[in-house]
Length: 67
Image 1 (cartoon, rainbow, N blue to C red):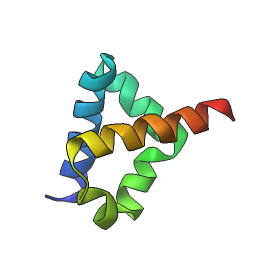
Image 2 (tube, rainbow, N blue to C red):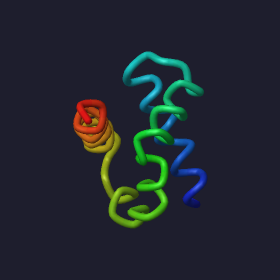
Image 3 (tube, one colour):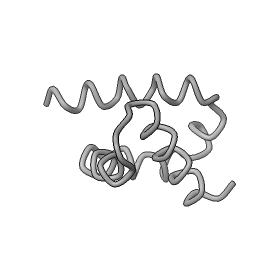
Image 4 (cartoon, rainbow, N blue to C red):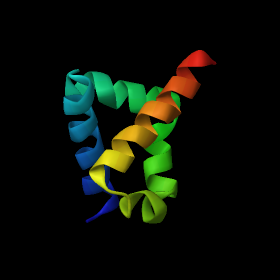
């Protein structure tokens, strides 16, 4: 899976996970730095299962939203 495909996969599945539209999740990922992290840490994150990814995103975004 390419990095771009992985980013799209993550955005779409997280969108379903939190029941928000894809463009809103894309904005959230971009503004929080998560979108860049999906590129820079692609090898590590790509190996996680879907449930682990959703949990990681939940925890990461919760920390970022507090700032």
